[in-house]
Amino acid sequence: MYMKFIISLFAAAILLAGCDNTADSNDALDPIADLTMINEAYISGTLIKVYADKQAEVGYNRYYVTLSDSLSGKSIDRARVVFKPMMDMGTMKHAAPVENPQGMQSEEGLFRGAVTYIMAGMWSMSVEFDDENGRVGSCNFMADVAATQNVKKVTGSDSLSYFITLVEPMTPRVGMNDFSICVNYKQNMMSFPEVTDVEVEIEPTMPSMGHGSPNNENPQHSGGAHYKGKVNFTMSGDWQVAVTLKRNGNILAQTAFDITL
Image (cartoon, rainbow, N blue to C red):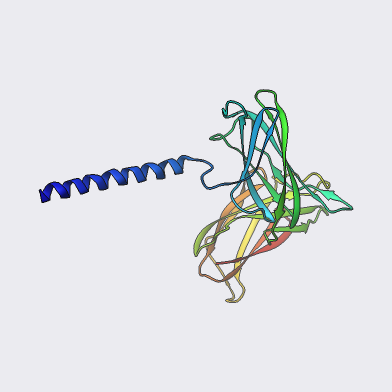
């Protein structure tokens, strides 16, 4: 009798563990499980939902959009989605660098893009769509953008204004870290094109200790406005990563990011 009781408990434990693992697996497969819905609207027979993975802040902000038929609930996986941020300062308005979802096909039901907010404050955001059913609309909301030091505006040797944005690392650790930046320039108040033709050099230092670190990898262009490399933080504390942009071997612009770990 005792042995049968033990066997029954063991079987129940396995069953419960299996159920828990299934739930975890389902959560892992849900592409919006770790996202926060920040707006939704019914427009022209389409339900549009906009998600983010963090509070809006100065810097690189990822946005995720889902589209579905408002009657059937069926996902719409082919559409053109465009982000249009706008800062209204009363006497003037300006936009910001954007990365619109590429192509017409969603990824796991999500249209993925990003906005680089270049200043703190209240921004209006318009997410426009033109879906596979020929329906057109937009979802509008306000984004209260928190201040950070993740965007540096610098004047280049060519007199243009450049925006250098720290993308990674956002959670730095001792050792080797991915280091990623975006580079855009100001064409006018409404246009901030990607910069794709510069060489990027980085140099991390720890000013309080008077040393740098070895084995860093200068970021290389990886598509769009993105440049990706590696930075090595050999100990915890306050670091500064100097960033130099060059074009044809000549210095175009320089700045630095303070990073604490």
